[in-house]
Image (cartoon, rainbow, N blue to C red):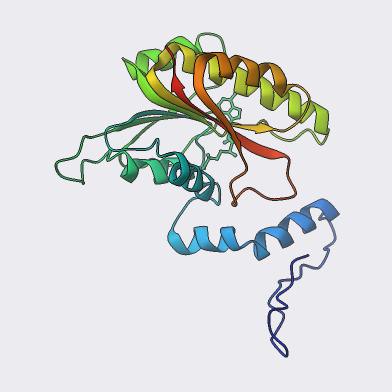
Length: 233
Ligand SMILES: C[S@@+](CC[C@H](N)C(=O)[O-])C[C@H]1O[C@@H](n2cnc3c(N)ncnc32)[C@H](O)[C@@H]1O
């Protein structure tokens, strides 16, 4: 548990959560972590729908793919943190006068509260025909395909790893279909055995493939992001 130990005599600001009847120990731990997470507090203070917003912010600050005029597909967009970051950066509302206006399509299994500047569709990305449906909505090439998709945790590490790699591979195939030359693919993966094939495939299709753990990604999770730039077409 992180404690504020930065000064002698300073009050410990860590929020401690008591176990309550009917609440599992894992839920208590989750609640305690949420209440003490600086990114959760920052997201609330800055009006973001979730702490995930900071992950895409940090990735984009490093790789600069969310530029004015960019056409973006955001897979697994609920509750909409990544969309909130992308809309102003790609100038989807045309607020940056004289700069190109971008477009972003968000996809999720769950319903997402509307966000001005984003086109949001409720769709299971793994269902038959999802690929064609997204291409239809897009109506042309994309500059960025990004995916923060994660299946609900099964509690079994290896199963979760395989599921997320499957989501990521399917997202990569959509990216191969829709990306314009020079385009970028960003996706969350869990480090581990099954990612080797995916990395090999990405290296064939893109000029550069980086594996990044942004500071906002929890240090105790095996989550990381692949950022593949310079799609070869
Ligand atoms: C970590 S959340 C995404 C957070 C989001 N990037 C944000 O900033 O708010 C992962 C999302 O992936 C979605 N997801 C998982 N499997 C999916 C699928 N097959 N099709 C569409 N969305 C999926 C989940 O519903 C969930 O909302």
